[in-house]
Amino acid sequence: MRGVPLRIEIGPRDVKNEQVMLVRRDTRDKSPTSMNGLAGRVGELLESIQQELYDRAITFQEDHTMKTTNRADFDASLKGRPGYVVAPWCGSAECETQIKNATQASIRNLPLEPTGTSGDCIQCGRPGSGRCILRQVLLIDIDPAPPR
Image (cartoon, rainbow, N blue to C red):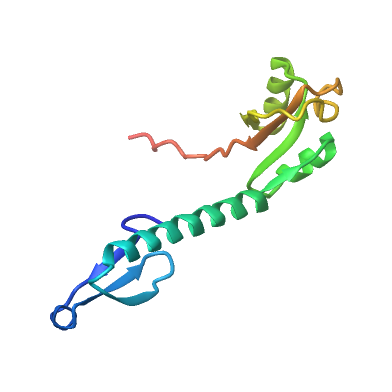
């Protein structure tokens, strides 16, 4: 959602009736609201919109994140599926480079609260020092401009 999350519509009849129309951008719901207590109602709606957008983002993130502990599942999860993969990693820069070269996936995040040893590294098989969050690099092939 881009732009203003809540629109306030005021017309001549609304002024006469001492009310306004509040329109949510995320659901397009309209609700007539008295001008008395308008500030409180706007605050409630903005908090509600923020919470619903946050909940939607968390659900999307969970739906597009796969957890795996082995290389075969890791490779399979990258094929034709956008999203993130959480996998054990030994912490070695060599393993990170090998994973990136083989799959075009790179480490995007190391969780702030490591879970400790979470399995063997998906690249080298050594004990993992924690989990990393990886995502495949999306490459766009752009044809060069034709010669003049």
